Every structure is written in C-alpha cells, then in structure tokens.
Image 1 (cartoon, rainbow over the protein chains, first blue to last red):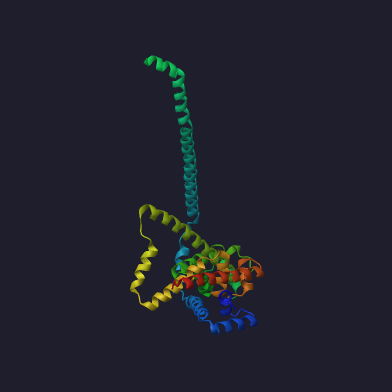
Image 2 (spheres, each protein chain N blue to C red):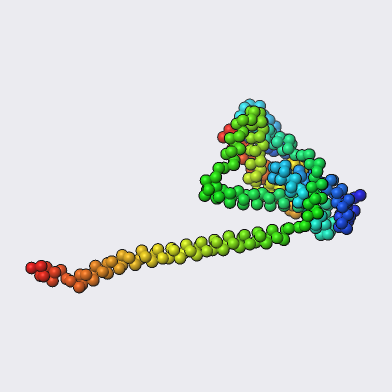
Length: 140
Length: 193
C-alpha cells in the first residue's frame, strides 16, 4: 500500500469501517511510515473537535426567552412582502441595466460603421467634382 | 406523558405540555443546529425558531413519524437556510466593501489572534479548519454527516429524517467523509495549522 491509498482510507480507519484485510494493511503501513502516522494524528485531532463541541449546555433561560417570543405577534407575513419587494426591485434594476447596455452598444456600433463609409464617400466625391486633369490645368 | 399526549396538549394550546416538549428536546435541537452552523448563539436562536414553528404548526402534525424526526427535519432545514442567507449577506457585504474600501473582518480576527497563547491558537485554528471543511460540503452530505456525528443517529433514522433511501444515506456519508478527508489532507500538505 502506498501513501495515496492510505491517505484515502484513514478516515474510515479511524471510524473502524475498513475490512479486516484492509485494516491490517493500513496498520502495517503506518508502522513504517512516519508521514502517514502524522496525517492520521492530524485527522484524529481535527475530528476530535466534533466530540469536544457537541452536546453543549443549553442556556437555563431558553424556555423563558421562548415564552417571551411566543407572546409577541407574528411578523412573518410582513417580512415575506419586504423580501419579495426587494427581489422585484433588484430584478427591475438588472433588466434596466441590461436594456441600457444593449441600447448603448447598438449606438456605438452604428457610429463605427457609418463614420469611415461617410469619409470615403466624401473623398470619392471630391475627385468626381474636381478631376486631377482639370486641377492641374487650372494651376497652369 | 408520552409524546402523542404532548402533541395533543400543544394542539389544544396547553403551555405545560409545550414546556415539557421544549425541555425534553432542547439539547437535541441546539446540538443539531450547532453541528450545521458552528456557532452557539446562532444555534440557540435557531432552536427557538424551531420550537416556535412547532407551537404554531402543531395542528399539522399527523403523528406519522416521531416528534424527534419532525424536530430534526425543521432544525436542519432552518440551519441550512441560515447558512444560505449568510452567504448572500456576505456576498453583498463584499460588494459593499469593494466600493467603500472597508476592511475585511476575517483579517481583523486573524490579527487579533496573535495576542493569544499558542495552545489556544492551535485549538481555535483546528476548529476553524474543521468548520471550513464542513461548510464546503454540499447540503445533503453536511446534513447526513452532522446527524451521524453530532447526534450519533443511525443511517436508518437519518434516512427517515431526510426522506431519502438508506443507500442514499450511506452514499452521502461516504462522500462527506471522503471530501472532508481530502480537504483536511490539502491543509495538512500546506501546513495551514
């Protein structure tokens, strides 16, 4: 067994969920491999956190606080409407943004298309209006 | 008083029955919420919401399953909803901080840690690392793993709570362990603790 396959099985080794054959192979590898032993310890310490933090002592005033909340009227309906209004507002802003972007994009592309075409037409028209022969003859 | 008498009492508005139910199951509900949200105050607030929901919807309880199954179901759903809402809030906070140039709270916390003794740093960091790894698990894997590890429930009980098959529970927990191990291995290799 190599490091990679051992590293894949260590969490199941800790939970005692490996077959006997695999368990023996893992234990044999662990005897010789310091790196795997070190990762096993790291994993065990990490999972031990669950044992430390589970089953917390609940506040002695838990029921008192709960009773106080029971006396208060329910505001759920109102908060639902606020949530819906917020979603609708942000959706509207998003659609407005996309629409504005598209409009701006269209204007920008139409400018680019027309500008060079107009200038080239003007230049051609210049030559048509005043051919080079008549220009030179006029100079003479 | 058995649990069906308790529910009958609550359905009729009897506060004494409600108090007995709360005191019987409060540790279980807080522990389940804590396994998902990893914060004591949030877990207690969520547990209060769970019991409020129980009181307000007691009429809907038909008695097809145990009260604990019903409580676990509400507790896990509410905890996952809180995490979803927190993620959304953090997303908007990040956007706000980008525009206002606000400081990241996480960096402030890590700066403050330098004043604490070494042993605490290690324990705190180890705990934060495990929570980070658990938070990265998909919702179903996280729920199944939490119920199994924090509440020590059998796969059969988890299947009933999550309303999925036994094979699905086995698969979710197997994948949760694999993913968790992978995330911890990455951290181990980078020597992040």
